Each structure stands twice: as C-alpha cells, then as structure tokens.
Length: 208
Image 1: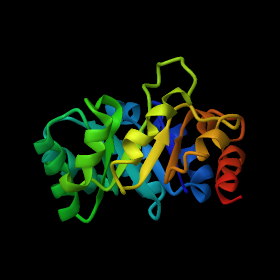
Image 2: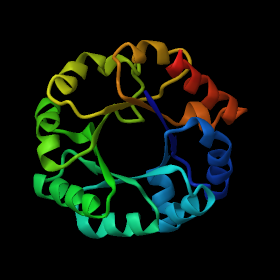
Image 3: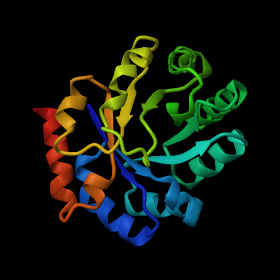
C-alpha cells in the first residue's frame, strides 16, 4: 500500500519544509489545490527543486483545457495530475493522452462522478492510471461512512484505487480493511506536532 501525503495549505515555504521532513515515508507527495491556486506552477517547480527524486502529484482537479494544463504542470515537474470524473469523457481522455505522451500519469477523482460504478468502469479505456475515492473535506460525517460504496468502485475496475477522507490514527486500520492500493493523508500528518513521526506511524502501519 502506498502513502500519498497531501499538502492542502497556502504557505509554500512551510509545505516545503514539512515535505522534506516526511519525504522518506511518502510514495507520492501531493501538491494540493490550495497551493496551486495561490502559487500556480511555481508550487510544483519549488517542490521539484527541493525534492528532485520524489514522485509529485499536482491536484489540479482538471475539468477543462486538459492538454494545456497537463503540459504546464508536467513541465513544472509533476509526475501525476488529477482530473475530475464529472467532466466530459473527451476531457479525461485528452488529459490521459497528453500525460502519457509526456510519460506521466493521471488520477481520476471520483468526487463529482455521476455514477461511481460507471466512472470506474470507463476509467481504464479513457487512459486513467489510478482512481481517487473520497468524500468532500467539508462533510462532517464519519470518514468511513462512504465505505458502503466501495464495491461500486472496486468491483468495476482493476486500476489502483486510493482512498482519502480525514484519515487518522484511529480510523486508518478500519480503512485498510478495504484493501485500497493507497491512502491519501493530509491534515493528520502535516498539522501534527511532529509531521515526520506521524508519517512514520502511517508508513509502518502499512508494512505491519
């Protein structure tokens, strides 16, 4: 199981400092949408400059202008980009095609999918490399409340699926029971008193 650490914050210098500390435990470092909105491609460039050997995902949540967006992000240093499932199939296919031509990868965010099962079923033929399964950050419900929809996704694809959703030390074991290919953890790590220690905890929980 892979650990993707998400940096959903606006302070780029702080994000880079924390990223450096937690990098040994992360398979993927996610440059969150807030960083991208505030700093643009500079955020990706600075992450690449600071961590030249790490896999970087730009959470651009693409819904339009896919070819141009992917090209800019990849040129800045991104290895992965995200595209929204609720946009048109043509956009998703364009994002995937462009990324693959540049030898990079695409994660399909199922957040706005009209049908989880159909989006999962279509993903591989559209060129997607992995899926992201989660609920909106603002929802206050139990982070495990969406688990009943897991089979709608898992049963319709053999692509890797990452789960996100306010994962904590208390909930991680229950989420791991679903056997996702990766977990996306943000606040629990980056806002911890000792982010490296927290990242190590989750990393070791995957290995146990």
